[in-house]
Length: 298
Image (cartoon, rainbow, N blue to C red; front, side):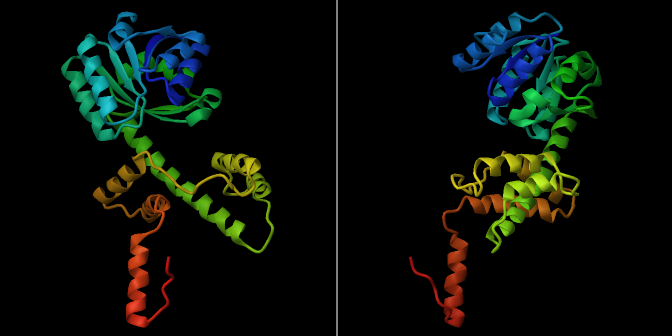
């Protein structure tokens, strides 16, 4: 197929390369001319603007949007809707909130343009291993661009999840689960690292991937990380979040679903960003007030 790719960062650039390797033609656009030039080196055609990108595609056109969620995706989709024609297809492969995707689908439908939301997992390893894709939107649009999904994903690595928003909804919960898994591994390895034993964390990660019930790709990555630095000496314990863990927790609250592990894993990320907790200062001060407990001074 011939497809437009908007956004050539770590994910978009690698996805473009995987599509080209799979025999597809890609017209690529990014605000960074260096990023566009890099994809041209891999076989893509360059676009100078969204209008120029659309002009290089034939109807029915397919355009993949791979830009940050929120305002960047909103503005990109809005501009595309002014440029595309009835029957064309927009695919949002970023980490958009599923409610935004429902809104975008309605805006597209009003112009007889089809909108697909494609939750995308795989990170920087996707180029080599393939991307796990969770897709929502009109089934007819999915069927039209299925060759794209087949190329991007490993065998059995993509799924039509349902109506508009379903793909990003499934990806949202996927990321919420990921938060919990990462937190469990982090806490477990800290207990090992703080013990009196001189444990080889890389060897343990390797061992646990040989038949244990907690084996996983994340544990394989832990082995790689400990192989680079046995105790992660140069890594600061500051953990960001893309937003999807927050959305998952909010969804759990809205649905009255108890999700303590996912919720606490999100809170642990927030705690990781504090140089010093003011709430801890309050607790220390109160213990001193009611019980005369010692307070450590700066």
